[in-house]
Length: 198
Image (tube, rainbow, N blue to C red; front, side, top):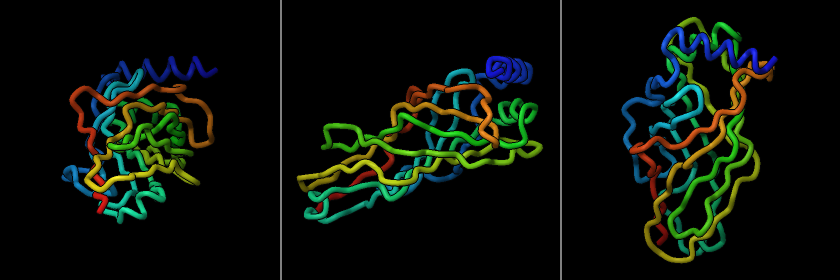
């Protein structure tokens, strides 16, 4: 059944030129900031659907005292705002009334930290597909998140995830296209912001 749905989706996408199309920018007019808590508009290339404009928001402070950085820091929030182009959204409208899903295998990099920081439980709440235009989906983290420590003073860059798995489903959890591997597109912005330890 899942293979049939995937086949129908790919056929519809091809018919309207959706495969490989770029979506509309998720958050227009927001430039990369020194504050890691502000969105970074960037782009990921995903299986089947091609390029997806995605805004990455990591709830980290732009500055912190050295004693607190040594104790450990953790993102208060994490959101991937994924925009499906009108073509891709149109293909989905022929299959479902709403889209939900998840993003998994997500982690971000902080300069000065040896391992990438994992992000847990990224879920997309059921979102009505509407009747026209692009479709914006928000994958938001919940629960305890990865902790990292910065043991020296200075300014440390925070980078967007290099890759993740995007799993869109129907609003009722039914499969649509399976797991889509997504990787940061070549030349796409990756610096979400920075943290100053003082």
